[in-house]
Image (cartoon, rainbow, N blue to C red; front, side, top):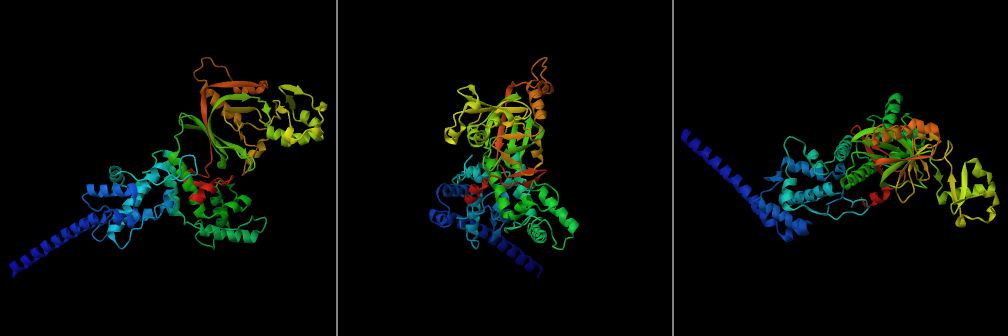
Length: 513
């Protein structure tokens, strides 16, 4: 009896092993049979992708990558979830949805996951938008060798994090990408759009709707929150949106509350996509992010100073550009742009020619100074204004005490301002296009000190130059790259900060997204 039992046990084990081998062989055979033009095209895989997928599986001996037996592997399950949450990675949510893998068919699911991940990996590396445009980049697919490398994961790290690293290796990119992923997993992707007004307009309804919005956005967990903690929550929301942190619902806070989290995450995705194609910064540069109203000076990869800035108004927006600062001008003249002179100064002159002297302006024609009292201003129109206007240097000069010059077709520069009280404002879009910089003497000191280290016995002193009250150009020995950029989401201490889309430049991207 004992020997018979052993025989039955061995027989069952052999049968089980044979059945397992048969299942594996069956899956391999099914996959090999499925990988032809007709089947692949039926689930949306065509062109280069089709050929590379066939080549990839052929090299594997048609062994599945994401499935085992009748179900997905752990990696397959994680990848499927990642592909269904593309917003978490800063990718359009409907990207690759033309691939229709039947979830009831393990073979179709296997191939669909490979195809979608191949397209995703290329987007993470190359970007969805073509560099510096709002044109979508055509989908592309890696070759079979690259595909094999892309689809290998370490057991020691979350697959989601490894997928993020398939993109750029730049530290700024990775910091942003991880912050976006964490934000999407921490907060609900709220799609509600609100119509909250400032407290001063309707305090009861404003606070009631604010509470609903913060609950929906995941900032509070209980609508019965007490007033003290409610105000703290408003302050926390303001902090993550670059607003004045006062715990009150003002106009700007209301505007930001009204936007859905879904929209903000899409804006973050657009910023991340721009970073995928962005050329790495030099070791020394100045960067201005217009929606943030901030300037940063980096020297030898070390952040030296941060300055508040005033940017162009919505009617006269500041441009984005890359250029080189080549000189620092102390007590600059202001050569008034023709558009400002003909539209804004001309009407003042027609009222009273003393306006020029009162504001330290001079009038020129063909480089010769002209006496404004000898001109019949009634005959001068905006369309035939034949003069140039220059404001002499001094404490009332619109450019202030210092100007940084860099070549650009927009005639903009970074400069000081006599009206420094404006830097405390929350929204600082109010110039004609130039960038006004707070504490600019300190910035000039740092730039000139670092620029002139190679000069023996250098005696240039910024404080002395400012006391002299003399117009002077200081040429830099080494020009400094300046980047004026437009990114409506930034990262601070590993957390996303959402900024107001002051010029509405994200809208064109969002339509395509």
